[in-house]
Length: 489
Image (cartoon, rainbow, N blue to C red; front, top):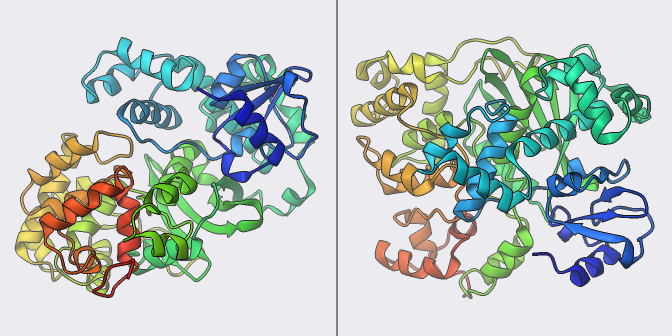
């Protein structure tokens, strides 16, 4: 429940730490804004506060054209109810939930009925799944109309509408203007976009954000030919369904966001593409809340103070990251990166891009599942690890193993450790990056135990209890501290 007086104080200060935490509807204008909106602060008696864009639009407020609520950072999933709501939102983005279809599948994943699931969405987000779907699609369309030169028809389908007529009707009904009105208002800087080949979109985060540390982490683990990391950018090839292309991500600190350049071949799959990038770059994190909790522990206080905005890199492709985790078992990061490049060359399809460093798509589970242990082992991978990769690929291809953000992390860990050659370290690492579980803790990690003073696995687990539910972030701080001493010393 929002405290209206506290929210109004935050609104008057325009503190960016509250961006995405709440939205304010102004009754005198019928518009809702982010708390960082540059317009004159309205009178408190004219303000209504909402926890989400969905709730604001359900109350018939229109999004502000200046602060653009669709760019506000989202909420990190913490508890189970929030994870369920987060998963449904992601499935809507991926086009897997339409007019109620697909809800039964998600409900089954969480061991509940679709009726229970609808109640959770209503409780967590204040809207029904159908209302949620409509708002997500309209907000993406609004961003595309404003920031890109994509034709309106392509924007309609890229946003998840089944026809241009439905898109026009929904847009006019909700925002009381035709979509072309926003296209006419598009800002001049967007004229520089190469509309014939690529477009750009901005993804916001809640500062502080350690972009250089994210690049350092991803660069050390990049898969040759599939990914390419420089001192200021991340690029990769993309396959989503039958669509292929490439993306390049750069930092725009002045706008508190990342700029994503994407090929127009990926326009029809923009919702899942943007969702994957939010996961990869941990854009929905609450650094203020996480830091406040971790700072209470003397073992982490120094690192948290020294490294504000440290994030947990996620996964663009869950299967890809899981394979990479297995390849990294009991060898150095550098050695694992070399082998991952060989693996991509052997099993990844070729693709043409403007970048000589990006020449292959990430290997598909279907192709790997058909291989033999010998086919994988000949790449310099020990046979037991090759058998683990094969088992993972076959389980994922068969659909018995889900590798996705928002699922039940404890269940994911149990499924992973049931596969041959996958232990607790690998399972927790995958939960940390793929499942996006903020409380994952690979307690057997030697670097973690050394950073805690060469403690045992049991002692590491006991110490980590003070960091819950943010143990994944604590691990990132411990990994940045390679010396065999306690962080507070």
